[in-house]
Length: 96
Image 1 (tube, one colour):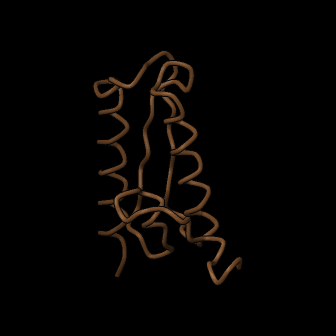
Image 2 (cartoon, one colour):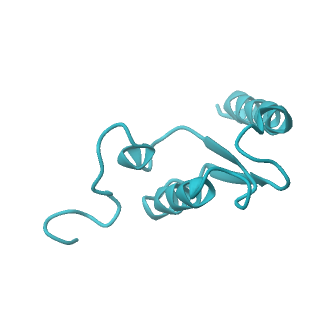
């Protein structure tokens, strides 16, 4: 804790994903393009967000980097997205 601010609470506005870091968030899938082709710093921002979620106690976050793709990597991301939706749906059905 520094100046009354816990280490898991980034000092940013409420529009930034990092503002919403918390242990009780729903499962989270982060998908970026190749860090050398994606928007400057986009992969690293997502990697930091993932790290902070883990520090906060959230263990249901994943990050995929799609090698060879830039920011417009929607089509190659769709299979990952569908797989994650199926996985989370299956887990919800298995819980009593």
